[in-house]
Image (cartoon, rainbow, N blue to C red; front, side):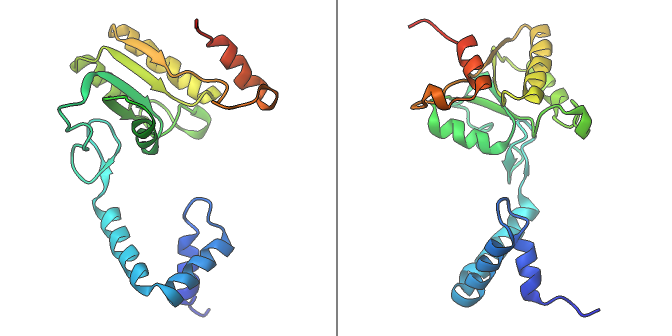
Length: 198
């Protein structure tokens, strides 16, 4: 059997990126080879370096090239507030969109026994250790309002209560600028359940 060409290997390699299908991967590969070889070489160097050096922060489990990420190492952050998120990308979204100045903990997913994702895979023992050993006053759950997300939130709320830590969950409901007629029933039900005084 003949070896696959480097071009085909490059196209297949680019398909590992989310949302990149065969046509997009082919366009990217041709662009790099025909118009931006320097950019492609830089991409390859940085990607190899990132794959070798980026790891999980030992405290919050976000991505970092150091033992402690920049947020955990920042003494100006409020160590009494801990926001629990599913993925590292959500930290960036929260920090850019809000004035939250506390710390974070990244689960890396949601409890899903059918998929083999239990408390150990989400680092919940590490989270419970932080609640036990640190001066955390409030845990803010920024977890998706799915069935698995709700189960994960309840699991965390149960052990946070054992440590006397206040537990809150971000509001879910109608998006800003959203029209009620276009909002699905589940989202509308959450919005009604989470209503507040004006």
